[in-house]
Figure 1 (cartoon, helix red, strand yellow):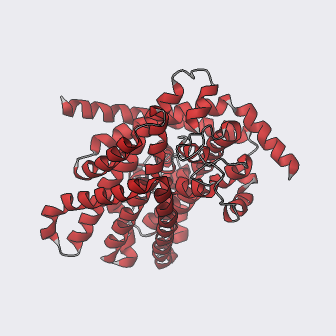
Figure 2 (spheres, rainbow, N blue to C red; figure 1 turned 45 degrees about the vertical axis):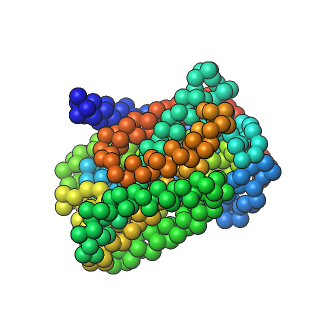
Figure 3 (cartoon, one colour; figure 1 turned 135 degrees about the horizontal axis):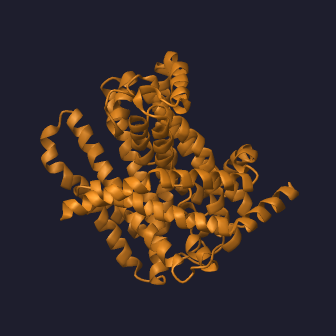
Length: 451
């Protein structure tokens, strides 16, 4: 019975993340981009200026600044979904899937602008202090369906945070550490490693939770730049090593993306479908998660911070995801039958040799821990909304226990459930995006008239 339910969930997930979601996301992104006057292109360089020279002071009565919201939004989107998800998209959709990920990434930047602006420009922070609440849970109160949508979103986001942001990340960390131990010649330790890793992650999360939001944000502020720097350095070495194959790789990716019978046997439709689906799952734009962070920041510059927030999507999609894809295709391993992290390892091994496996698994571990930390803050905000600001200690215990059990369980079905929850969050946030579109356009027009 359990096996039947597991298979059923995955079948439903394959359908939902098939053409219905892909076409809907592509059409929605295009319409919203046009309606906002191509904000992601017109304000691209302004976004860099605003992010680099951001006023990172925390507003009175809040525990997170707009800059910390940006760092944590970036932290949640730089995870194993981008690392392994890109390889999976290329395995299923051919090299052309990377081009569609790149193209759709620009539409996702508009999603990010919208979810952040609604959270701070139209609603803002509704409660003060360390238990401050803002974002989607508040702006859904202003829409038809307000009797159920705020709680539904908070429940979906809480589940997604606990399952994908906690359990799945801890599971990825475990496999990464065990891979490092195995390749380093410590195979005998694997019999005890699972529970040892689970206990260490449990202890780490206890340390996080005891320190509250301030400790979570402080650790995230340090982890995100570290994992970005390590990824950029290692990926650059692979690309430099394969420099002679870069132009042929780009040509192959473009031909595969726009040729009806795509290169490598994957049809054009497969390139589009898997490219777009994996992008949404990897960068999390349009899920409202960034809105939870920015909504608690008390930002007084809604348009500026919304423009800057688009860079988190650009970095996760156009820098990280596309760099991974280019490493895979330029190294010539894209059609070797591998997928996920194994395909990433094969690509990085072209430059690093046997050390490539250690590099990729180290990245996987760091990405997993970084996402785990950032989602600790997001999950706490959803919990406080659902409980009316109560039982924060119970939440901390729950988050710690999930870290332990998430490390040791089998999570195949959980991946499918998380994808379905992801789809639900995207649909209701897009509903809000269209409902608030007149206010979004008016706010952007007013800002542009002043600059």
